[in-house]
Length: 278
View 1 (cartoon, rainbow, N blue to C red):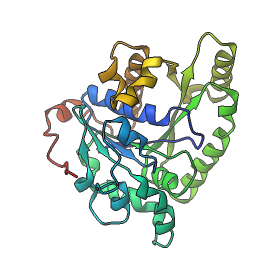
View 2: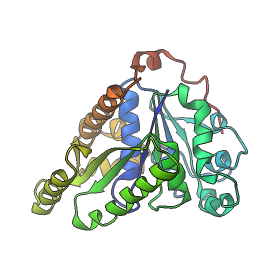
View 3: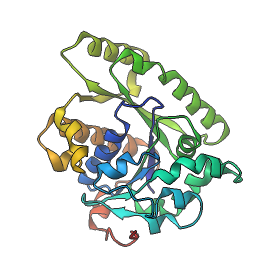
């Protein structure tokens, strides 16, 4: 059964989508069948993987409203073993449309449940807001991964996000864990980056990933080409960082009770068996 990880931070520009697409690709490169769910109305994860924004295509919006089962909205990416549930601008109105639906916080969890056995990991790329879409992701997931830029202003919303995680754990999802806090856009040349990283490690300890994602031009360029960093420049520092992060995430999963290594199974599986077309 897939481990579901929400990638969330209500502050924009901290590397959520960059982390979602490249961690997803890195996990797939480790023979873990992975699904990336674009939960953001901006649909950046969708476009960064090379799919043009298309409001007529089946997407997470239609899945949440119950118009199609999730498997009929999935797309195959150019990365073997990596699938995508796309988003589009229609999702912007979902919070209003879903407000009257009973148990609206559980819609994404219920949609994902039938497909959990088809994947090793499911990554949820959340919008930069603590809205109903993010709450749905936190209710659906097993853990939350928090990317945080190595600047002091990026620290401001962290306590608010962790408070939201506590509230969701209390009221909706008692199994919810913090997967880890990921330091992004790290510039080893600046005192500020080094100080922020040291302060976070002193305060959060083992909750900080060992992997640090550096500022990297190639990492920033890859989305404009609709490619992951492994397709665009596999020898870059950005690619190395996300490969190491994937190893940490796999280690975390394998240490948990009841886990089993499905990597070899995924590599042999037919990736098209449960994938629909737009």
